[in-house]
Length: 131
Image (cartoon, rainbow, N blue to C red; front, side, top):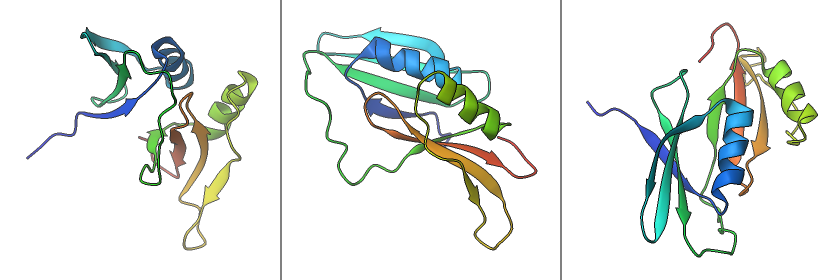
């Protein structure tokens, strides 16, 4: 079997992105690899073995075109209402909270927030179970 280990996104400003993911989701730099043309920053926390890889291409000044193929990454939280309120209070502009009830019964509650480069992030609390 294969083990899922990370997802990668390209970002313009390393510090701005590292700050966003740490303040919003508690991700910290687990490893940083610096090369001539780019830098790889692996972010992680104690909640999961998976990492988010930020790639910074040196010399890039234009925002990345996210196109129409990118969907989102997701974080599971135990209290989505408290997380939403905290992020809103810190000025991160999370979108509205939504009840996920495909069959009429609420099975989760979520909201989306954009990171500094425009990547969409779902923040989800599942009904009756977490993570």
